[in-house]
Image (cartoon, rainbow, N blue to C red; front, top):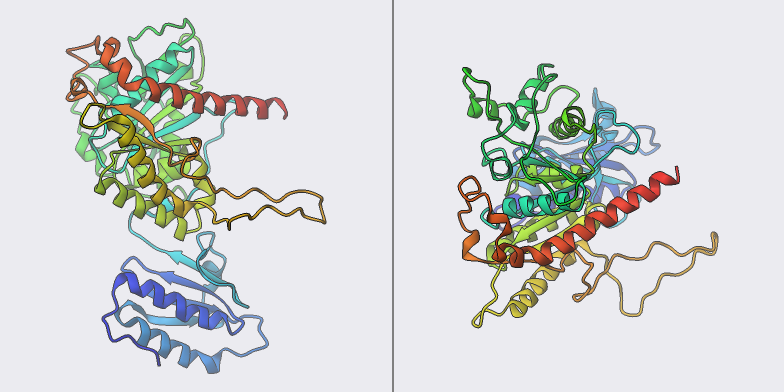
Length: 471
């Protein structure tokens, strides 16, 4: 039997489990490797409908698996589907994914990872949404930072006003539930009675109809057709009634029978979009929704980036903490096979960029780009020098081009979108300084950010319109 002279730890257990599982599938059996919430592994072997009898091999498989994984082998480490009451629930699970790093074998090995939180980072497809009229789906851009304090919410507010100035109907949804900011920054004290938290709580008991979820801000856009709305995380409450925000927050993240948290959050955002159409004078739906996501590796961020948005702006500073965090996140997407489905909507934002004699902006952005390229490369396709796509002789067409941007490609996810740093942006109080938007330093700090992101959004809107016109 193979064993390790070193203690088996969480990280090595995954490697060992896959090696043992591949040994089983290499003998012609399909299998699903399952990791539980404590990190322990079990292997379900599909021996049904096989001429080869797996029973004589079962004892040796289990002994090898248990010996190799030690404390990270479950009590029943190898199970035969033919002896299980509900093997189909595992073998046919929609959550079973193919390990992208695993070599091909005569059998097929898939993986189910059970976690307490964070599972939505591995799900890139959108949740099953509530019905929406054809053509009425708003474009959604998410703004996210691995660490807080990078100016994400202020950038959301600046971008929202700029898009409204261009004539768009813009809705900002504050998804930073633990630290609400976008609502007060955009609407001051004139918030709606209810917020995202209220919808998540009330919808769980079928009591969401009638909530006042959005408010039109007092800002008058330069374009007469522009509108700026905000859906706060926390509403202002009902006069004379307590608003127990913390009690509500403690209940919002759970899955419900038949309705996972991702679907619940999507329904809340759609309810806010519906409210803009219902409560506005023009009966217009938002065409752009900005999702101000909370920071960190959190379920809100996981759902927002992986499933709810069309464009994801990833904020960061050029420091060790930023790149360690994004490196872990990108590696997780790659290992779970999600890189091809998410990478094209990612764009790095270099926030708080210095521009001085001692710290010139160009040098900072070059360093940011190089570090971002290093981390993002795990999401890109590997292409050998001189390799080109070969035509498919059966169809006379070229295969899909590899996604392999170079360091200097400005369209790539790693290309930094800059926001300049100014001391005046620190501790911004929009209630007591309502004219801060028009200050010269704000215009200078966000000029490139506004132009670049607006181009991304309007190109996406145009593409959506073209597709709609061909239906």
